[in-house]
Image 1 (tube, rainbow, N blue to C red):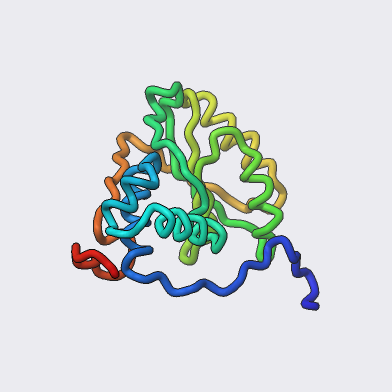
Image 2: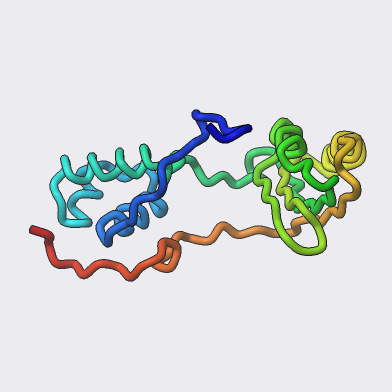
Length: 175
């Protein structure tokens, strides 16, 4: 057994997605509340087939969950920022755990380039954002430096045909 491997985190290799799977993903990305019946009708398969495919996509880790798209300002988080971090080499896992615990952390990415981590946060106001950056982030020993980019306006993009790779399937029913 490989050292440091956690069996719970091991995921089987991904299975290739066919055109029906990609169509199902497009539908669910646009409307995570779509019923099995409407998904089945739109991709021209039986409800049982659509149900089985969605469950397989969940089991395979392709679908990670279903969420609501939130207007953060209307939800009381009027300040948003992307924060870039430079971190100590080989400290990603430790830093990631600490960033996940931050109030308002919405997205964390390990990236390449001039910085190591990109963090998106939503806070009630600039004072709370300032506290988060100057007190919480900069007190993490593995964080060497930060740069804060205030978000003045943001727009969620509607999920379109290009979001899932592969061309859309013809609208012909499958046998």
